[in-house]
Image: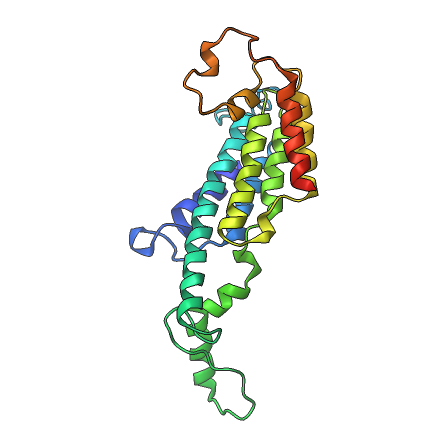
Length: 252
């Protein structure tokens, strides 16, 4: 149950303001990624039933793979919200200051061998910098960039889950990755070869599923829902072919 504990630390101690009982420790992309991976680590490729209850924790509930995947996606929602906010601060910094200014508009001193500092000054400067939200530090901190492998881990979890048709979910996740990459000008989150390969695997599995979720993906704007139509009416292998063609066009 490390995922539950990790999520609790993230939400109740890192995200929560100090005035509300938090720890005043700002999370970064790595913080969210670790919680996402904690949820996905428990995925076992099962058919909708979790592992047997632990002998020493019989009262703890077990999450199915699908539940774990959507728990991870909830953290992705928070990750992207954080990324948008961090990106907004970065853009404001670009518009009002050069690379030597921090988020408060103060200039950061460049290294100069001729400057003389007392030991107390060095300690005070180090402590002040560690507490500040320096624009220059954030700009170059890799932990503040979204990582495609976080999304790939969710795609792989969808591929291994045996309890349902996840083709539409995979297509939506690819769309989401491309959208956030364009919105934040962040190539590090754009789908890569592994993303597309895993997506193709999921789509291939959906080719022979009646009432495939891809029908809803391509016809989500229709007033009549899929559930109101008679069973088997939307069995159409061309949906999978259309999705595969879409992915191949993105690759090339």
